[in-house]
Image (cartoon, rainbow, N blue to C red; front, top):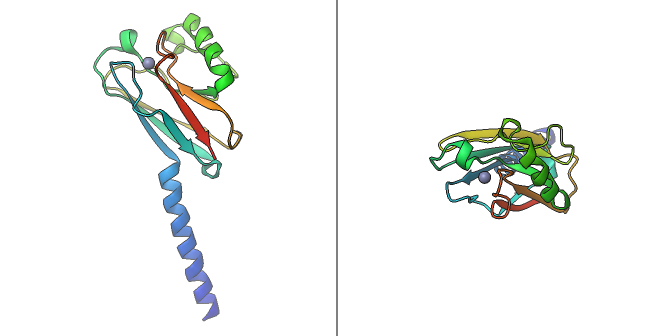
Length: 150
Ligand code: ZN
């Protein structure tokens, strides 16, 4: 009887944890033709281990004119990542190849397209100062937000 009760509690805890996992470890954000992201803040828990982010370009302009990507870096590195990315060009998704300051990044997509990336948050610092942004030339000023790790 005692064992059965213990198993039931274990199952209940697993269920609760499973729900929390599903809610906080899958992120989604839209970009549009007006150089805007749909979110100014995204939050994840380190408990996720890995996070999957989906970027949807809900506009209609091609990526050569209005491309968007989703890039994560420390806030103190973001501007330099963008500056170096402009020189790297669209062929490199406007990111310097093998840029160690880039913590995660999707490819650049155009209107009507979606892309997703799965990355580890295990090495990110809880309470650290992180920014997500689009590295397409000229977009960083508007297309950025706070990435909160707890
Ligand atoms: Zn953009």
